[in-house]
Length: 114
Image 1 (cartoon, rainbow, N blue to C red):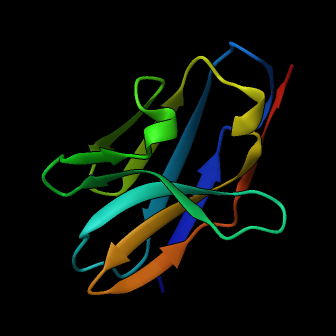
Image 2 (spheres, rainbow, N blue to C red; image 1 turned 135 degrees about the vertical axis):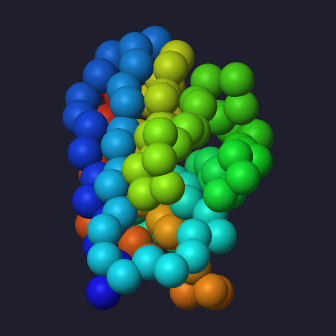
């Protein structure tokens, strides 16, 4: 089974920074991409950023220029979040797509105070 373990969430003041980390383990034969999604209470998860095996990145318009997704090996992905805003407050989920299957972490809370 594939497992994703996230870390790095917490409470920060507006304008501050946080770095989220995600480590994947288990039987993974191919990674199409890894990424981060976030979910506001009562809403569906929305894309924050993704990065492919080849390093191609994609960002939601709301985070472009503030967030940076990166990988340091095939199974670890990071999200550097700068200039955080109160509207970035959400639960952030790590995602791994492999052979059209989606795997999710348990989620980590990010809270930005104004």
